Image (cartoon, rainbow over all chains, first blue to last red; front, side):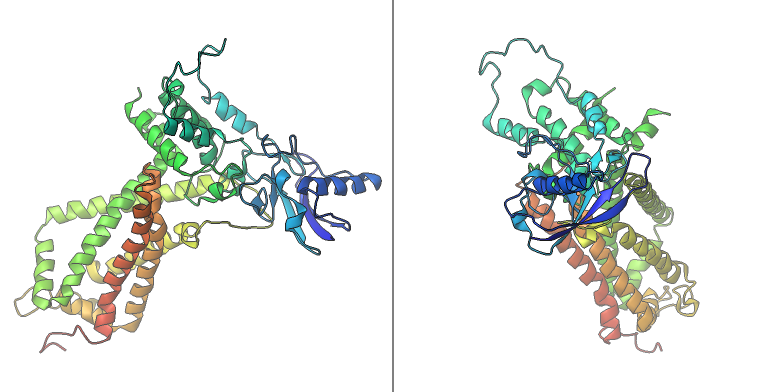
Length: 248
Length: 233
């Protein structure tokens, strides 16, 4: 199939950036979206032009590296899918596709479609862990955890930290990401000791990094490749209010 | 900076201020509606109710100031959050798209501000009396010598433009509440499969009750169901 691609090109952090249009003549429906970009880049390289920079690693939908906004939707039009798992069979001949980087002040564009998501790492460093001995694994079942609690914690832990929630939110809010990380540990017995401190520190860091606030658009939930539900945001709000009211 | 001030800069606590003041304002809107609907009982009941409210004296002023504080907090916090949210995305997408965010949720600031301007106009009309001074409640009295709020409202709404502005404002308020009510629960941390159907139903239901309740008055007056008392023209 033939496609027209409008792609954000930006030389570096300081460059203004602009949309550039490319034509691709021979795209197979079996290609993944990133393979389609690989083909474009090979053409660009053969013409001695600068290839389009985009981030990728596992291409299996589990690493959270790929970060493209396709036609205004983070990770593209397919639900519960990272953009690396989006396939060209969902497009037809003659389609025009807009490809842009994830947009947020806290995610500065490094080059073309690659953004720096270090702000997420700093939020995790502020409390997304438990301070416990990490030597040998504890005996199985030595800490009893209810089935429902374990499932809820797993639902939250499914977050791969890709940043699509931020990209989709009209306020570039990181509430779903932080909520998933806070709730993942907050629903397990191992996370109880630092529960208050964790939510206070992670929310403070989130605000400090310049993410926006939540206005309950729920766009984050719609684009999350791991379908993290917004009920975790409510849980974080609850935890945060409790922590503010009872901490010193 | 002191700790409470620092905490208020938190996006979550700002949202809690929005939610808490919102709850109070919704309760006022419901109470005000129940008061207004007494116009259907008749002039006697309506003017009596108005006089009782006025007789509260300092109590009435305490309630007014408290409501004013809630309005100011609700607006200032929303503008603060809007600034924060706009700053969080300095470069917009070239291709704008939305998957599931409702129109009501995306227009909260504009619907809210329009409701605010309406409230100012509404107070100038029915509370302060600068819009139509000749029919203001202080100027006209009923047979018992009470300020004739009943006739004032009817004179006001017989003007099609006043009725239309009132109608539009109430629909905007309903639109604002469709998103505001479920949003308020989420912000306060209330989200559970058992109560979610109730929470999500409450927004539209409350909106319809409020819109229908309020606009029934100008419609009834324009349609001639509620008329001026005999002898008053």
